Image (cartoon, rainbow, N blue to C red):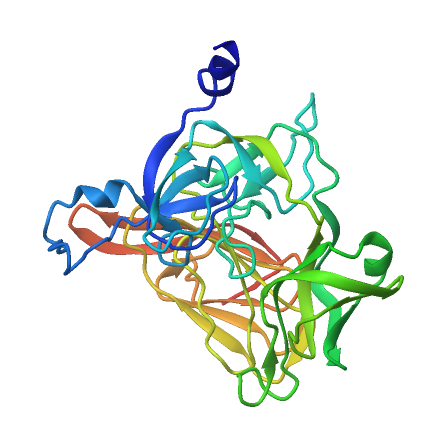
Length: 367
């Protein structure tokens, strides 16, 4: 009885949701609400007051990232019909599935902030920090063994030959062990173009390390392309971290996108879009940031690696620079540590007009 009270009565407050996917779930993964649910079979149209929209959950994506539901309480086996699962909602304590090493906040040490990812490679895992709010967690546990090696700037090179892919970066072999897992977030070799017919994009995913040939190399059994990649190496065992799930506005979660030579590459609405780099483009990659539809939505773009020759150019449909008066028409990125953080000011009541206000930033070129 006392154990039960300790686990669920103080800081852990699970709720039940209907998971609509058919795959297995891991303890600590984040889910989002399917708030736009409709079904011809169930007779539920957009004009119906369907209560299922408040309790149906799905994996996070670029289309539901503004509707964070909570963190899965325990492991669940795959079910072809979907299943009821328990999640810890924002405002609760939880054990989150980690993708970064964590530090407990002590004194002046702030501790580690983790935001749920919707990237293809590690969707549902809490890794790179994004905005505060729903979908972001404050670590309440120190764990230095979650990640063995991290290289997000695109310096790691992948090359496929003789049925294995060798990944090369300084120290990756020394830090890793056979059985650990490489999480390939993105990357490309776009020196001859960045689309699937003339260039090559990294195949994102999680891959077990099968061999370690040297201090600077590891091998996996899957062809992910001959590409520069952004990746991190997870321990062979999953690490769940005690954390507090923040409340407040939607963080919008975080994603990882790969700019491509002369290709329009979109970012999700709201949240943080991290940009791959470490390769050469011969022409700009582009994205048009549409006007917001909800007051106060926060949106950020952050470069993690250098992009040579070409750039990632964001056209802002309606924007104001940080000085509060100059128009923000474009924001251009080509290096690591460049970022822009924007807030949508507008869409109040029947007034649909507004603008993206550059709240903060560094390094990017504004025009």
